[in-house]
Image (cartoon, rainbow, N blue to C red):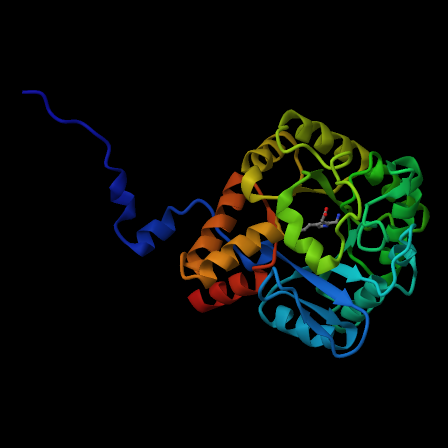
Length: 327
Ligand code: PBG
């Protein structure tokens, strides 16, 4: 008689504690980066309709908000500014007294240990909503680089700990690295949105940051979602230009890309769990169709399993809360 032979995988799944012992991936508070939107004005808390739970806040309210974030054990935030006035050249992006510069200085004054990351782009500051200088309907690469370097330097002067350029012009990391070094900020790291796809998942963010392009789209500078090899070319050139971290964005539909970048480049990888990924979960949860807490944890774990070291997520406060409750 032949014996039935097979492997008993279920031996390791008997109890929660046993499953905990063999768990391969963990989500920690240290993994989380929380995005915040800062607006001009006083006593402003503008809810973002397409992102329930996300608000634009004015500077006077910001510190209370940040206190909550710090109390929850979150170690890092990424700051987006929404200026009162926009113009062709996005001058408010690199104004030393701009909204994001004032926000960064204020946060660092109150919370010197919080790692403050500055998003370095022009699209929230330009009247046309593009990430670069526009001439005759074209987005110019090289003339934009100088403005990005100026933006990064003004953010570093304001006290930013990390510069995160998201603009996707060629050479943006090189230009920003040189600008920072020349201004005496050679110790400030660059977290490059090196692998950024032209994605419909950014829709709700553009409501939050008022940054929709007023004509055309971003397809001449952001990547084609159909491309995988190109992601490594983008990532490699950013590394050569001096990036210290690489962001892959969006995250959920690009887990293969996160894995590729992690396996091929020896650098901390950041997954950006973008606005559309957030809004889809929020909408389904509001309808009672999914369990929000379980879905969010599964999504974020999948990003870490794919190779992300850090995750930028609008769910950061919720996740930090859940982690505290478990302890
Ligand atoms: C700016 C920028 C965008 C996001 C972060 N920085 C939008 C865009 O490229 O249009 C999107 C973030 C999100 O959707 O959560 N370039």
